[in-house]
Amino acid sequence: MQMDMKRVEDFMKRVEESEKTTFQPVSEKLKVGVDLGTAYIVLVVLDEENNPIACEKKAADVLRDGVVVDYTGALQAVKDLKAKLEARLGRELVNCAIAMPAGTESSAKTHQYVAEGAGFEVTNILDEPSSANAIYQIQDGVIVDIGGGTTGLAILKDGKVVEVEDEPTGGTHLTLVLAGNYHISIKEAEAIKQDYSRHKEILPVVKAVIEKMATIIKRYVSQADTDTIYLCGGTCCLTGIEGIIEKETGIRTIKPTNPFLVTPAGIAMSCR
Ligand SMILES: Nc1ncnc2c1ncn2[C@@H]1O[C@H](COP(=O)(O)OP(=O)(O)OP(=O)(O)O)[C@@H](O)[C@H]1O
Ligand SMILES: [Mg+2]
Image 1 (cartoon, rainbow, N blue to C red):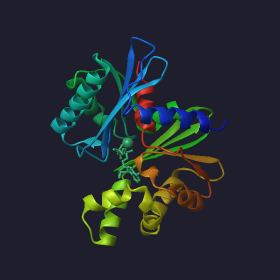
Image 2 (cartoon, protein in one colour; image 1 turned 90 degrees about the horizontal axis):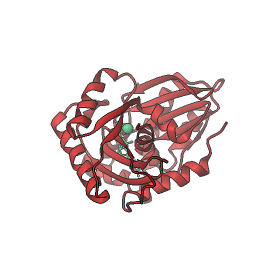
Image 3 (cartoon, rainbow, N blue to C red; image 1 turned 180 degrees about the horizontal axis):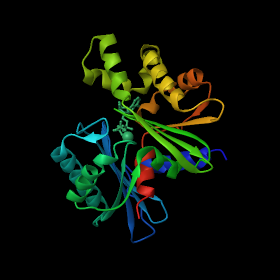
Image 4 (spheres, helix red, strand yellow; image 1 turned 180 degrees about the vertical axis):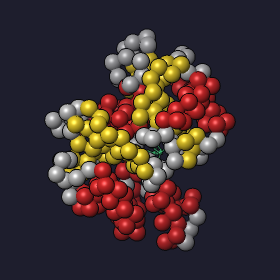
C-alpha cells in the first residue's frame, strides 16, 4: 500500500496552522509529542482523535548526534514551550511521548528526565524514524528523516519496522558547505538555506553533500527490495532534494510539501 499523500498533506497543513492557531479539542485528554532535536525542540499537541490542537518550536543547540549535551538548556527550552502551550490552551499538559534517534537508546533516560523535569509524565518512548510512520502509515519502503545533525532511517516490511539506523549527517553539513562557499557566517548561511527563494541557486552548491546522504541511504536499502523512499525532517524542506536522492539511489523518492513537523507530530500521535 502506498502512502495516502492527500491525507498526509491535509494533516501536516493543519499541524503547521496549529503553530499560530489554537484549535478546539474534541476530548478532555490531550496527547503531546516532545521532539528534542539537534536543531529544533518541538512540542506538538493533538486531541484524542489526533486532531492537531497547538504546536510550539524553538531553535536550540542542546544536542549532538541525537544525544542531550546540555541538560539544563534542554530542560529550560521544554519548560518554556510547555508553558507557552499551556497559556494558549488554558490548561495543563500532562502526558507526553518522546523519541530517540536509532542507536542512542542508552540516552533515553536523559530524554525522559528532560521531559519529566519539565513536568510531563512520559507515557511512551519510541525511536524517531518509526514515529514518522504514525503519520505516513506505509506498509513497505523506507522512511528517511533528515534533521539538523542526524539522518534516521526506518525500513518497513508489511507495516512493521524491521530495521532502524542513524547516521551523523544532516542540515548542519549543508549549512557548513554554504558558509564555506559564500565566505559567510554559519548564521547567514542558515538564513539563506531556509529562504525558499534561494533554493534553486544553492542546490548545486550542496548537491554533493546530498549525494553523500543518498549513498548512505543506499547502504541500507536496495532498488531490488525498496520501491519508495519517504522523506521527512527539516532538511527535506530543501526544494529539489528528493530529485537528487531519487537519481542517486534509483529509488522513487517522495515528500510532503512541509516535511518539517512530521516526526514531532508522529511522536504526539504515539502518546498514550
Ligand atoms: N526551509 C528550509 N530549507 C532547508 N532546510 C531547512 C528549512 N527549514 C529547516 N531546515 C533545516 O532543517 C534542519 C532541522 O530539521 P529538524 O527540526 O527535523 O532537525 P532536528 O530534529 O532538530 O535534528 P535531528 O533530528 O538531527 O536531531 C536544520 O538543519 C534546518 O536548517
Ligand atoms: Mg529530528
